[in-house]
Figure 1: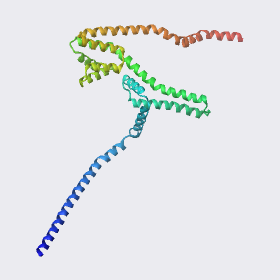
Figure 2: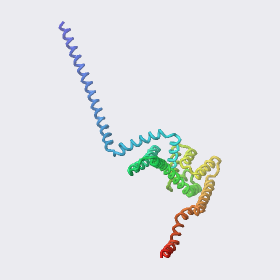
Figure 3: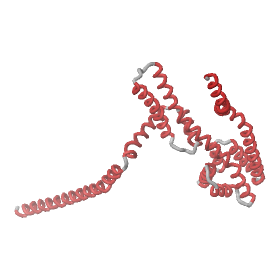
Figure 4: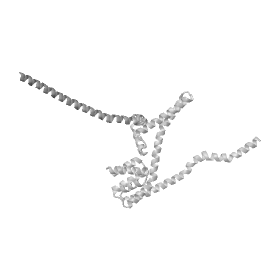
Length: 307
């Protein structure tokens, strides 16, 4: 009986010690995990919060708000208008993202409308049909100004490409005739020249180096610029590669054609200059000449009749 009691006590003590050890080990592991978790939280969260708080107000609040408004406006616009905007922005050299342009577009229209409306209210005029029409007209002008600015950027970049294309093609022709391949000649052009054309050619070469087919990269180049002269040149290059024609001979012919087109455009502009100058001459220069010539005579006649 005593032996059984001693065995029961020993089993109870052993079980208690075992449970205590297990409990302490679990508490130690959970405490360690919690301390490690807290350490990770202290190592990451405060730094992120401090970085966020250290950012300026424009980058922390204003820019995300504008981007959210731009995404909302972009979702409202039709897909055809968005695709047209994206295409024009690409041709213009991507001066801004499509969402940013949409936000700028809406802000310009709202600013013009609010400015005219506040001007009418400040002057003290009653807001009637004429004032409402004036506000509407200036709101439409605010809608038109960003599109006009974008079209101007597109035309300016295309003109720059057209002006630089003959000289660039001469450099490519000389490089090919000297023994370089077409890709090496285009790379030499991208390294030696500056401008929109060289930037787009460098981008095309990067696409080719990344594994894109030359034909696809050249076609994308024409889509990014939409210049007729460049499109004709690239089509000639693709046809020469397909038919096995000499690249150097084709480049020489294309260079001659581009120089001829540039000379013809210069002659056309010279012939149109007289007609374009007619309107400012009639409206501004002739009245000044008449005032200078007939002014003294008019003064003398007025003095003689007055005397």
